[in-house]
Image (tube, rainbow, N blue to C red; front, side, top):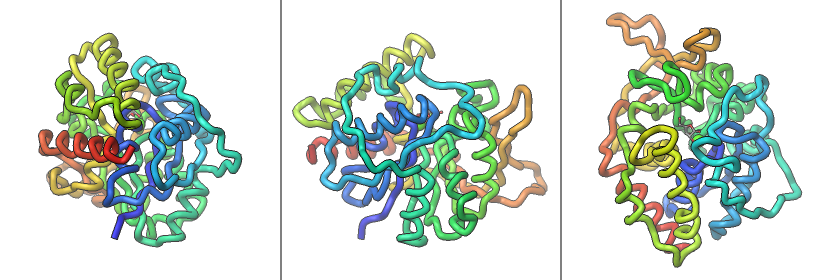
Length: 313
Ligand code: RIB
Ligand code: CA
């Protein structure tokens, strides 16, 4: 019995790696990929989802949900890390899909078609998830699980000292999601930055005899270059791929129920994820949080997923 998943993403090369793993994982049925603005504009994120599907050509084409502008314009992008097009400036061609459906509508449709059976892996700002909840508040009760890449518990932010990129990009939506009754698992920077891919990772990914291998060869080296140039890091973090592993192999993570909320007003702290860790907490726990991971095993899962994609393409 395969598990139905929706990948909500703002491709972004690490989003693309997560998609490459999910689309060919025999345990998963990717029923939809919904695009959201973040690393790049909403329109570019939608184009990138189509381009990635055209590059990988999976046997089952998921539905595509199109991104739309968030209520507050995106405060930042990540083009300096992922390239102007979000995928290493490859300007991949793509086939425009004539039937364009809004991401939140696709989420609504797919969750109602399979109540309590759909896992959503949120790899970008939480705009679409919040909009789906606002469209139908009952949705929180019938989404199987929401796995979120975002936030920090004790680690510093990566877009401000206090905030991680996905949450910072749309804090109001993130607050709606964290305050909802949904079953949530948060995979914060504290954990995703534990799983570092040094240069030897490039020697272990599939070769260019497959579609997946060619796509990775065109995108990953770019990420290593920008991490070195802009972040001074000799390696990369595939944050969204780690979040996908948390959805498929949760036993590789130490998880703890915590009470989380999002700062939406702070001049210095807007977008920060705040946890009630007082000795006598007053907030009700609302999120399962990954607080550590078996980094080697998680990297092995990523490599196995990419090898499966290469075998299939
Ligand atoms: O902070 C890391 C997150 O921001 C990842 O999802 C990456 O793709 C960017 O969206
Ligand atoms: Ca992302």
